[in-house]
Length: 95
Image (cartoon, rainbow, N blue to C red; front, side):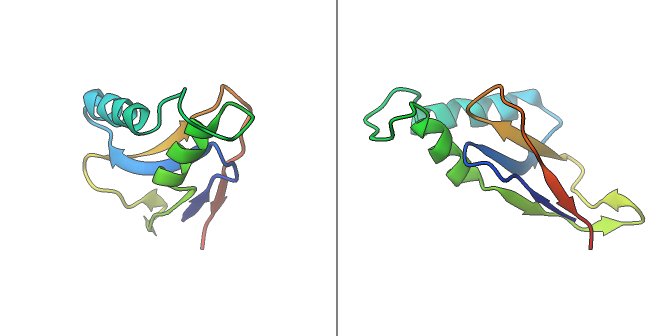
């Protein structure tokens, strides 16, 4: 299965889904790496969202076995919205 997010300010990633503090830590560090207000040239005031999206990526490939995603025990798939809320599309390709 391939999941694709066709947006420049959103991303999809795989990480631990058992402990919510991991998610909070990731978001906090992304904010430290690319703060909302910074020395950016982009005029739409969302450069931080573009940077965060680039760091995490727009797609993930996950094997499927007997109709189920093959993920590690603690893994989950996360859609990350960095410039919203907005209406978004997410495409899934099953091969």
